[in-house]
Length: 290
Image (cartoon, rainbow, N blue to C red; front, side, top):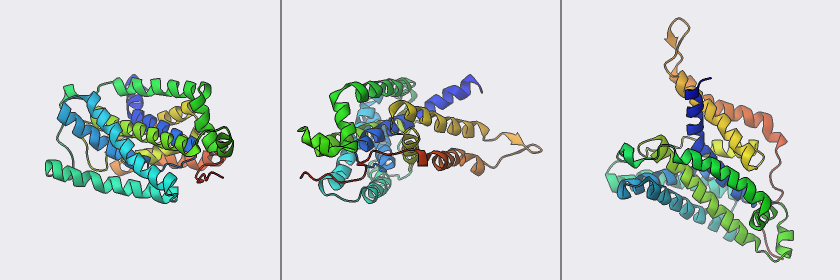
């Protein structure tokens, strides 16, 4: 353990924390959100394009959040308004983002692999790291001590009781899914304009699913979820540092084996703890006002 490894852990866990907190809003309201991968991917692309256009990482991240909200609105339209299956719709959103980003990239830059490199002075250096932990603290306070936080919780646990109190359940779910899109978009933005210098095709590399795993591991609570993201971030930071390290007679470990470490940790964590986590009671169910 070293300070460099700790700093790397904090940095690489930042996109996971944003996305996992976004997933928390959606799932605590009763809407399963496996579309986090697609929301992050489109957010990463939009943030890179926005930063290249405006030369400001702040405006670029706003582009990323707006793209996440737009795609989340499409998802909410299908699962809340049209009552589509949430798993199928979430998978479709992920596939849409995977196909849409290289298509738009081809139109804008005549390549499908990546956007042009963003200059160092136009990228974030540490702001997203501090912002994500401030957001964790804000979410803890908001969920516990505000009426709207209770509305989100009741929308996922006892929607009939919330409706009886005069609060429109589906409106609460709409807002929760849109917030989820904004935060997942910010998670994608932190990938392309904080951890990297451009957008590259499929750069999320499963981080949306890792964020969802952290959310399950953290039992849909802000602080435990953020700590689970740190665990996955630590595994990612370790695999980065292990690449090229010589073992067994001076021969390095094949990089393919090292790169699977974060995903292996994710699988082991889910296999060991998912059975002990209980999602909101109304999770995945369509609310119909009686």
